[in-house]
Length: 77
View 1: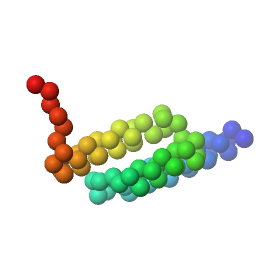
View 2 (view 1 turned 45 degrees about the vertical axis):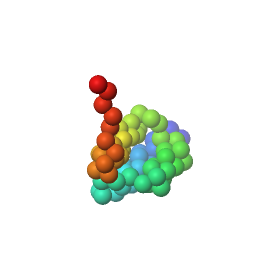
View 3 (view 1 turned 90 degrees about the vertical axis):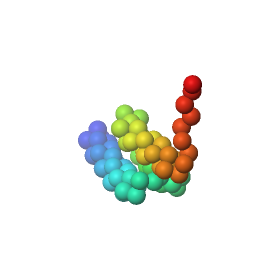
């Protein structure tokens, strides 16, 4: 049973990774795309440690997209 769970987790993580990089190709992340990643995480029981790197990269891409749209970060003086 442990080997089966490990196999399913590895396959789910592979699917997550493929979907993630497909989303990242255009440099923008829609809420639908973000929800799809969240669904994959929940559906297959992926842990934060499994997706932490991807989530950090996702936030960076979202931040850069917002800057391109003219939504600049506030800087305290």
